[in-house]
Image (cartoon, rainbow, N blue to C red):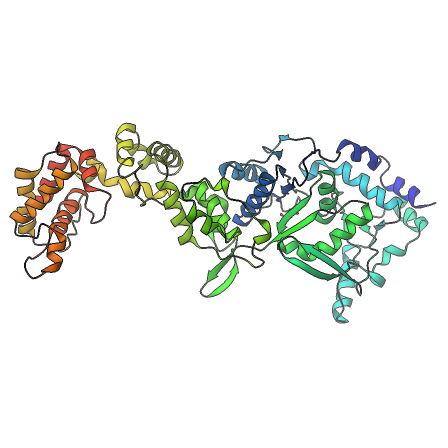
Length: 549
Ligand code: GLU
């Protein structure tokens, strides 16, 4: 009996690997094209760090005319969650990052290198495991979990490296006959890789992000096929990224220490290894301590959070590009009008250690992104968000024409309004424009410098009776507020007031504030002239009269 007989005994029906090698040929892409992927496990919600990796991968494929594909790594079926795949697919869609190839729903996929779901690739892994067994590079292991536990305890007591290697790798030395005998007796087994490595030798790895790193060689006989017949991450990674013709593996840096094992697997399988780029996790400042964004503690760790809050997906993407490449910020400053797609992403410039997540900055980007949208876009996107998350806002937006006029205030000009960072801000930023809410609500008018009730009433009455005309152009309108100020004994120009502050009790700006607070209930709003125009004559008069009362 030889290795081939043992391989046939274990996987009688597996195909020759030449079948798969031909079925999934080298891709015919132009020189330098990067084939890369996002390979999440459907074991929970999509983490913002996952989206970050996917964004980097997509940027790399895009800039080199390569391929970005989505592979679902569902070999840990105990940890799989319901709708996990749908969640992943939809998250990418929400951010306008649908892959070129791979899963496009829970059950459908596109592309010629599939299946893109690992649980559907069992026959492929078996073929490659058989191929290794045939060469004596993999073997069945009959150790029970209890035996494994015993080994671990002994190693711990002796204070030596844990794992299945060297003298501890009991089943590695079974003869083919002994192994075959056990199988025929119905003993349970898994398949292990027979590592040719030695711990006292070093390997050099050049990581696209981390640079040069030295590691000891791998000498662990890791499991490649588990008791449930599915592969481990390591084995599936080697087989899949080879057959899918990945050229650059972009993944979280928790996998960096597995590189020696992965290079060894590629080598023993006779595959050319891909390049690796290991991304540092996104960190959070927690009372002065830097820690990873945590699935349990931080709501913003979940990609769904951004959708629920209504933070525009473009703002999230732009923020992630910001933390990916520190040069992005300067580029954006120099090119405020360009689409972020024009930014030349550089993976070599990614930081080796984790960037700090900064919500303030993200919301600031949100404000800029929304300020550049047309009123129609703001309307459509707010409505879409409101329909899902805020029925009251959706109702307010039912009158499209009026909503567009509100969103048009201070928009489309050189210095557009920047008061909306996310769709969940919209209601608060427009609610006072609705008469049914404003006139019927009980407002607290918080006036500023001019706060005497009688004085305020005098100003408002005079404004309604003598100065207010909805048909005035902006200049006339403002001159009238100056006249009003003068008539009430205030400075008509701020500059004059500043030069002689003792001459008047307040100035035209303070009179404007009286009008603004009376009209809107707020001290800060976008342009008051435009607000009055949108409200219309009756509403303005009703509002001022309500303030007088
Ligand atoms: N399924 C692995 C994970 O979610 C993928 C790592 C990789 O990209 O290779 O961590």
